[in-house]
Length: 312
Length: 308
Image (cartoon, rainbow over all chains, first blue to last red; front, side, top):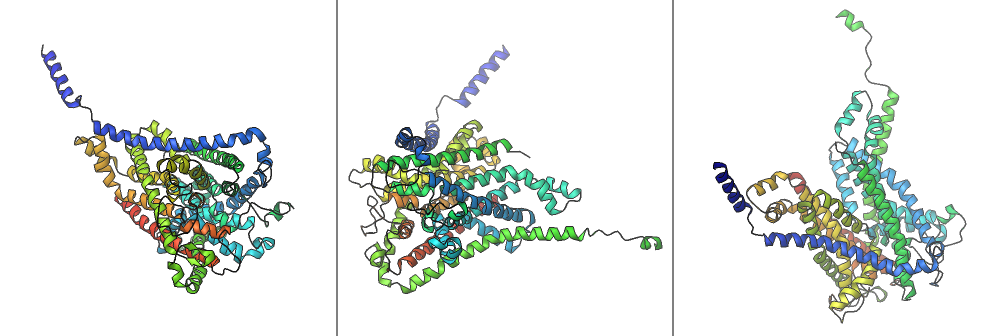
């Protein structure tokens, strides 16, 4: 009997507490929040859907010919091969210059630097550089690599060469490489370092054998993402003098570095601004090529991050 | 004592070769870090020289004239600064609700499983290059949205460019704002829920104010990015520097768009001496504005980092 009375009381209290009153404002709020994410998803799918719808016929009609074809003012035979080669060649500069410099700078900031005024200046400076608009890096490249060093970077083309473009992109992504690498280094716990010092290793030995291997997945993720960023960048290349016209005689890889250049995003920009309707499909097809490369890079980064994401 | 002193002293200083190697390596790493300062100096120096020579040589009246027409020697700053302001305003009207809404949902509502599916949407959107967004503005936003709402609008408008820039900036705003809300300690939420607050109340009255400085920083970074965005504007805003008021439904020109067209040569004429310098002058202006915004956002970020 007593238990039954207790039970009814519990039920009554619980009903009063939980209530059947629906929190309409709360539900509306949550729905509105979810709607923002759904909007983002819808925009993304419209974007990709539109590009595929407009670009797919090009691949269907011409197949791989579009990928291997050279630039042309005739829509029926224009292809993106030179853009792919140009974009990939510029990535060599990013990999060879921005990666070692960026990771090196991150190692200094995280492993060596004490909290001095100079360190803080360098730190603030790097964060500010990451916020400088890409077109300003284009101006930097124009002033230094094209104008001042033109006789080295591209003597035949008044400096508007692939070297200038590659160097500009490398300088542009350097702060991003530094910031992401520094984050990865920071995530390595101090105990790992102390273990190294404990057995008599020097600072460099600790960094090389302990810190860098543990931070490697994070650093790799950041570098792949910055590579993708460099690959999709257009504005600085415009300022450094990218062209979709005559690209010089294909003498060889090293000579071509000093020749005029083009890149996949530049081709997209130029084709999109042509009045000829047929080039619109080509633009969409070129975007498909660029987006597939970028999505591939991004998914590599995401897989790397998920696989090696380690909780200490 | 005697015996102790006479025992051979143990040299703890280590091998000098090892020390030398350490110093060299440290020096290399310092050099890499210092290189970033060199880049900043190079940016300022490469901009300043030509920007100043433009400011000296240009007729002051030309900076306040009937539009941005470098070919004719008309460098009306109101046109391009006004265009930039218009695009930035529209883009933030798009990016603020979308970005903050996504941030609140991801940080306060989504469970771990939903996060794993929703976060990549934001990340993929963040990875869309701006040329692609420029094409999207021209192919979809302008005909499908702007011209459908305002049927008299032309294809190239500041409105279409601004909306597309807003889409581009949204993931940036969302991720910084989410970081800031994520940094708010769980104890604050628990205290709020313990007092009987609903999740909406907790999000809006406790977490949001606690993360406010980070959210402000996210918006400032978004503004800075929108001001510096080039390709969308160059492709979708029309690039005409006429003084048509600051009509959002007209073609227009922004600072970045003006730079792109100066560089592609559509505004360059051999012999028009100042066009090249004008490029650097506008660049310098852009650099100073974004620099100031970045410094400002840095302040706000430091505030929320320090508190928790």
